[in-house]
Image (cartoon, rainbow over all chains, first blue to last red; front, side, top):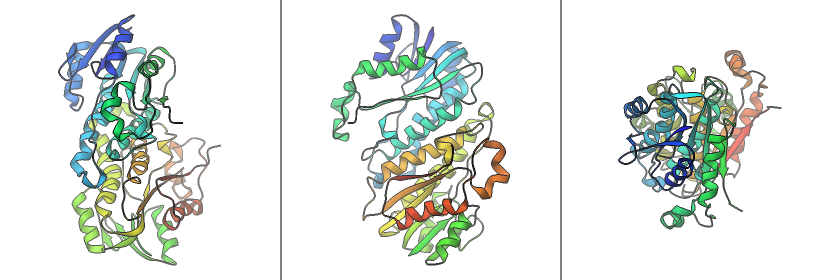
Length: 202
Length: 202
């Protein structure tokens, strides 16, 4: 398979890219690193990326940002950071990319546990994640040529514990191997419209 | 209680307003009707509305729009209609309105079954609804002075069947009395962070 991994050099992205690279032709897209550059907050940049990469069998997105701050400190513009990047970035990737995915291929997006189980200072990040979950359920009804779409939503991942654990009291870290398997299930499985939740809350 | 109902003249809004008006002081806000005018897609208009209305015990929002169209016909700008109106309109109502709600008061937002169970042509509407569900769960962790926040998500309501039934094959209409009760549970109950689902799918 020819697999385009947007954000393939990030914390989760590099583990996912390493895994798929063993048996597949992986193209990594990143804002400043990787094989091709893309700013997912800019739909023209997304279109240019697909024009450069051409047809693929799978698109995996592990990119996009959202502002983390106390709700009473969030401005309207702060919310739009996440709406333009992590939300519309992923929506535009599907909207534009559907013409570049081979029949039976797939999109795999990324959210996180905040959609279902938010913590303090994540009104924007939670909202964006919840939006993508419902988008995936709706988009799977309309994608053509057997193209599938799923989203991987994991809890606090092991490799990000140092940076984020203060935000997630009592959350059990998710081993990177389990996170990678979420992407494998989406890309190599046959499911569509799935929210692949990788949580360990209890 | 002094209750501000944004969209209080709409299909659901008029039934909710009629109910609360029996025992409470209800102020109806609408784009062109009601006691005070507001365009919820414009945060300055929201601020002006609260300035005019003053302190309230409950804010109910049954307003906001999103574009319904086939996914492959949706432009980026089409998605922003829902993001600016039904999504950020409701977020801004809470963001700005938190200073105008009395201690122990509440916000009640509105989404719909598309968040959980979308139909064709609703990628944008589903996404906005899912976003609000996660936003409510996140915002309830941070609102101060005991202010609560919930969202009512109902299936195809009885009074909208004629206009929308073609979009919802096999969906059982929800009686208006049950829909109104969702708002009553949020405003008069003590729950917070709740997604009050009023579905009848099976």
